[in-house]
Image (cartoon, rainbow, N blue to C red; front, top):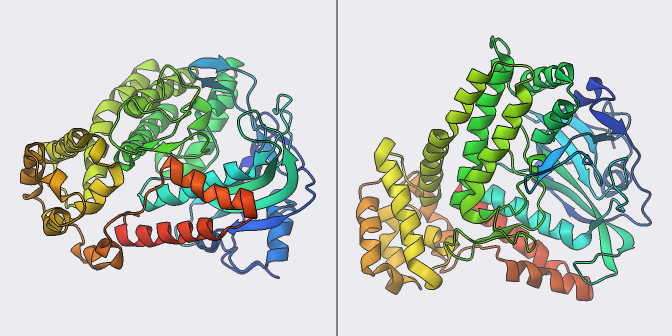
Amino acid sequence: MSFGPAYSPDPRFAALGGEFADPVSAAVFPAAIIRFRNARAAASVGLSELDDNIWRAHFGRFEPLPGNQAQPLAMRYHGHQFRVYNPDLGDGRGFLFAQLREVGAGRLLDLGTKGSGQTPWSRAADGRLTLKGGVREALATAMLEALGVPTSRTFSLIETGEALQRPDEPSPTRGAVLTRLSHSHIRFGSFQRHAAHDRADLIGVLVDHVVENYYPRLGAAPDRPAALLDAVVDRAADLVARWMAAGFVHGVLNTDNMNITGESFDYGPYRFLPRNDPNFVAAYFDSAGLYSFGRQPEAVFWNLRQLAGTLRLVADEVPLVDALNRFSGAYRSSLSAAMLRRLGLVARGGEDDAAMAGAAFRALAEGGESLRWEPFFFDWFGGAASEARALRGPRAGRYEGEEFQTFRRLLAAYEPDRPERLKADYFGRSEPEELLYDEIEALWTPIAAADDWSPFDAKLVAIETARQAWGLG
């Protein structure tokens, strides 16, 4: 099958050379069973017409895409893991497979892998991904996209026919290889590696590469590193604000798990909140709650400080500090905007929006055990336009309480944004789509027990229906 005109390869990262990545080969897997193809994501990069055999060749065996990278590249980086510096990182079970242009928008996008085999950075691990881990990531990315969070997209999930041993789940367990579509895999830790080696020259090269390919409007900035940090601060503030509005807990906010385009990626022990709880943690090993739900803005800011520290090798300190000092205000503004988007309201601006967002958080908190996170936003989407619906729904008694009066009073001053969205069949339901831990486990059980993928497939269809109804984009 030929590749059509919408496919536009543009392998930019490979030109940076051996200081930034290592050429590697994918593992040879005994099988390549396609479990998920993201048709919408494939269409966005001109690859939707590939038949299954060609799909397996490129995303199961990782034969090079036409005109793209000749060989996969395991990217080099360092990072702080739970704020302890680790110089022994890098792509240990993945690689950059290809780069290509997004149809229409023209953005440079990456196809990267997870579970594609060992690399020089595997540190004695097997470089594999469990099928369950791939299923969990496919669900996470679909749900986050539906909720308006900038995220990588699960592009392909292929079962490899391998039996893997894992200490934290019943073993042997099935293996898989996942391909994700991302707006850059360059991480904060990519800069940290060169700073640790005192290579200001390589930091400069990386800054120029990032600006030219992801922030071209900064090309004429007199101080590119400071201008870049300023832009990344904005993107990171917006990302964490959207996580908070989505009730999402990433779980492992290490510096190697944050990229320079402000896109969420690499989903391990994530969770969506059952209800408002700032102390909720996603990772069982996060005993100190370092990356708990309520501490995510602090964690992101800490990571930005580490990125700024690397840029001190190539920029003056004052503009870097100025950029960092903007985070708090940028986060507060982004959080208000994110909460209003989730409530389907037209922004009024300034303190009004901050008060509305604060009232929503307080209402969620005061709802206690009886008010789940996602149903609250479902019931009140569109504001006062949905009040009658909310007050006749299954949580009506909760909303009649005194603690909700401030929320409802402030809500009355807002107009619904695109009220036609409320006509979707989705809002005629009594319950919204959620993705809580127990449901993920329930979706995995029939796959593990009987190779029954119908509940997983149905869930992805249901999430897509919600995405179209919310229109959060």
